[in-house]
Length: 451
Length: 161
Image (tube, chains in turn purple, yellow):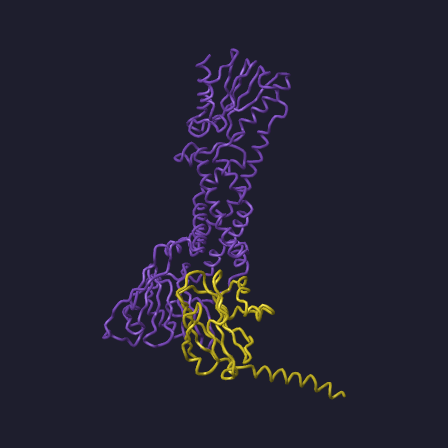
């Protein structure tokens, strides 16, 4: 049976990548849990826009012997890398107002690092990463062809979310779920490809260049960090990361990463020594990372989890549908020659349902002792002894013929049947579509015009 | 003979206690590692203590947590790979070109000024490997200075606490 190029590519792409997609989806589900469980620790700080950087630095210096790095996680946790009075290095979550330790940064659980490794490189290092990037690209193509098929099935992009025709479980939910999940899956696949491309340096260079800013030497020096205007006015919500000066040497500076740029700030005067804007590619990478991992957003993490799980369902239902269709259109082994039959059945079927009916009709007529010939509408030709033709056809998309009936209208005028033909048309369709049985009606009209 | 059996456990206990209290003091040295502006993946940096004959004695710091890449640091791997002791406490995430990190090295105080040396070994996946990006003798004087690197490290600066 002829199937459309989109359905064929959708199937072949899925078939070649299914094994790897199963691995990626299962590990994806596991990894989606990580940001959710991370957030559940509850160290998130509210009102970061009301805490000044100066307050936090002061509080940290009071509590610890030395401070190396202050980091604002996208989860809203404030993380600091400090040296305790016992000369021990410690990574902790803190309350930015008091510098008090809320909890220690835990080692990443093994299950997550294992899943990450499998997810992005299949434990095959660089080759694995390339492969996973490729599979990501295939997933993107599968989703795009899927959406095209979906739009076709529903009768146009505008009707994408209209009612779904009742059908068997796998087919029905393959359609219903794909309408909801194609968006997050496209995002997952696209960011996956992007992150892989970044790994292999396929993107423009992201190195940033600092621009020196000339300062006057007479600038005011401050005794206390919280008096420095820069540290007083900058609030934590604008910051991503602060690297502390190595020593009190005036040459040593604060290196501060904001949302869109990076600054080097003099530790005594608070003057900006140099600044650098992040290039677009760097910002896009950050966004891709957040969208792909769900980091810092529980709601999005849940969606990613469901989307990953849905891929597993699509793989299952997709193969179940394929097997079912193959069974339905299984070729009929012994069929008499087309020119020996008085009775001809012509079929137009997209998903195989109509074909199934046609096959049953054929079998029954055969059992009743008739010589019957069954073929697709696309293969319409002269039938030497034919007296009756029965046409069984579905309608696809917006009143269009199914894939295996697409050529019928073009072939019909070129064929001259030797005998007078009596014909009947049976249309298969659902009243839920506006173009109900339109193609069947058209076929009927075509035959009517010649007789 | 009987008394000997009584003495042996006592002596063992005393010995254990003695060794427990004479564990070597560590000297904390703050160390800044500044990378060059290379492009590519984060660099693996290993800081090791070498004995006077140049053999590995102890791993002081490991930058890079993905143990599947450890074997790509061949010199150190010959030492570490044999027993693979737990290094969670002294490891941290990799940093990329142009970035810097500060860490605290716990250096055994009794090994300073005794002919031992410190080695900074670097490796970047699919790029180069430097067995001795920086290597210098472990002296009180050296622990206060800045050292230039030959590979992925631009320089390191140290400051005893």
